[in-house]
Length: 182
Image (cartoon, rainbow, N blue to C red; front, side, top):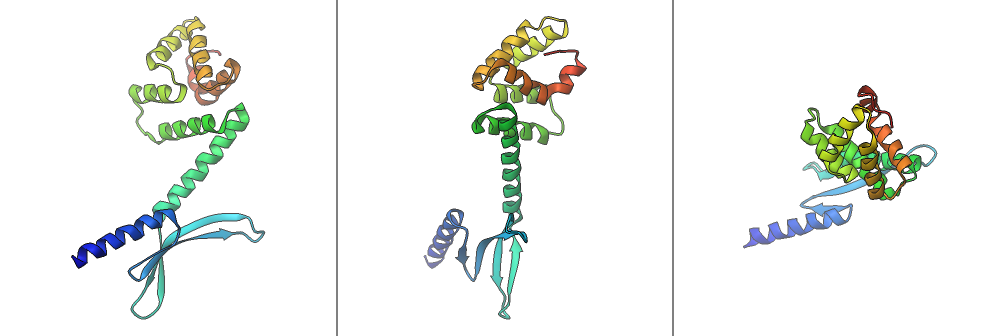
């Protein structure tokens, strides 16, 4: 019974640890420290565990998973802000682009299914429509591609020209390699 209570207390402490930045559990505690440069600008945050050693000293171990997550979040936010500014998008739609591009770039071997899933999640259009539209555009009929881009523009609450600029930004090399002009 005593062991179960100790486990419950530990779980509660860890749960509170996700809500706050500093937690004390069994002689150690978790803390995040913000670092600033000489001029007072925010540099980075390091999170980790402080442990008390038997000789009375204290040691620190970094929480690398948290550090990586923070860096990825910052990179996504910066990328999203670039897309938002460049294409006059809402921060939500810009973040949608940033996340989908990041997800696609993490795949080393991209299959046709991966690209179809990317198109569906990013543009909100049926992947088979995209394939048919691109195939038609390769032989000079760009009406289908224009219709798909128009649908995607509606999903993004933007105009067709802005959506074409987004498609050119993300897929410009592939379009050019296949002789498709937007």
